[in-house]
Length: 440
Image: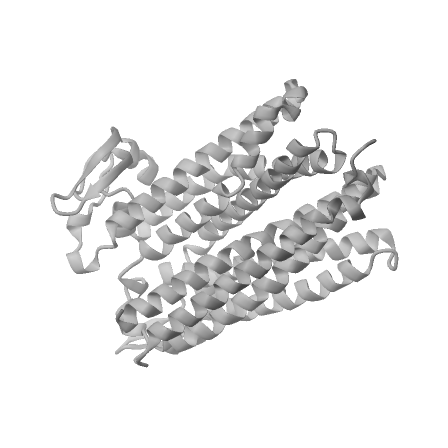
């Protein structure tokens, strides 16, 4: 394994692992605060029980996520010093704001966890709101830094150096809004459906359990709304990518040849040798519409770029198909939930429905991983799009493969610890929360 591959694999493992915690950190505090707000309004026991149970989960994921986030901050400098040398002064602002949001979240979470029966009820709820807002903002700030890598701004590149640096312009680059919107909605979709799936699985074992039934309803309410909005944000992102990163759009659609109009490709396996897509469904003109809002417009293909500057088509295309397919499935599930809630509430307790929701548990996070793959792999070979290639940013330090093996081992151990902690937490729900106890 060469050092470039080792560095890229280590970042892929670290980012892929941490993004799950980022999504949970953006969403779970909001669900937690919402449940406490429902308790303040209704005084129903199940709402306060859910808020307390979810707060413990938030604490566990926050602690483990802090570890992986810290590792990532060191890895950027150790693995890609060439990138940080130039990017550090430019995108330091969103990273510093992310650190501020993280500390605010940590303080507010401490107040929330230890403030039960010690603070005014509404003041305690407000601390939960602060946890939720700071968690979302923390994610948005990090995405702003990543968006800059896709749409560099706020500097002048002269003789291999960045001059005339404007951190504000860099942070609010052309890609930050579409990426921040898409990532925030993805976090709510993935986490909400995962939470609903876990509680649906537990509800199948105890059909009359008020705690789990209410938890499923809360989680799906957020997940359904986010899942409906996600295709809209996806359309915004697609048009943005078509304008700024046409090579990425061509790779995710496996569009080898510039076309006017361009077909939308559904499924299929890219054939790199013959530059075509096998076994795919083609929707005439629809890619032109998605990219430019016109069914007859031209879409730039990979033939307009040197082969050395084309993204890996196979990985990008398959990851994109997985993301979109899961997204539409979860949106369909959200639609069913809203329809059933309005017209046929009894179906929400049926075995087939709860089994269906339980089976959806991991899919949102699989879609997030696929989407992140599209973002990162689709930008290659650039680490800063159009400015610096990944191979020029990697550390010259030898033996990076050993760092990769070490970090991967650490993450495997952290995963095992996390699974043990969450299983232990779920096993104690019935003991500590009255609304979760089985009825005699």
